[in-house]
Length: 276
Image (tube, rainbow, N blue to C red; front, side, top):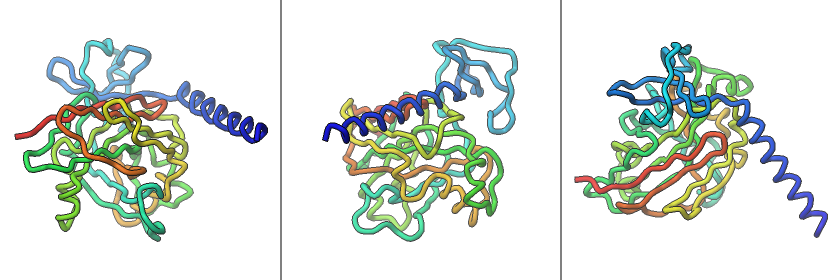
């Protein structure tokens, strides 16, 4: 038993060291608001170096910079399309996994950034959290192979796919249940250099850990999802592919806070407020 415990400790330590090494080589990008203007930037330490455009679209440093403390972070994404994955962790399903991944679309208007409020609609009564990882596409992807799919992922971020379970059960499509205004939080950073096959995802409801797994546990990897989606849709730079969530979820109430943490990406924190 002692030998097994020592081996487990070594495996865990090796995984931590791998993530730490990746984080040291990673680049962090942000979208930020300053004086009413929204810009892209590269975050180095506590300094934001302004970019001429989105990093996945070739944006480069302009020479201007600003302290992180002097800007308001927005969602580090600006997609044309948002592809969600359903039932992609075994801990979130009953029975055997499907032969093909479940995918659905939500509108970009559902996106919010770190620190922004999740607004519970007046008629909502069963609004759940869903901690996920989010892949950001770096170049046009159309009918790409699984072997090449990883090279089309520019970077990753953390996401909370807020879901109204009653609407999910009632509606023919999930657009309202998962794509209403403020239902998809992303951030705090868009990070390159991390392995999308080895991202630890943790969700905390009012500070209590309620979700936690690794992208290595996915039924369909992010690379597979990019490959699969590209067979039917053309993916464009900046588009998002979400992993799907793990485990069981519970309802959030106004005043609650939900955090999604991915090592190397940071902590995405949002509070719930009551809508009119």
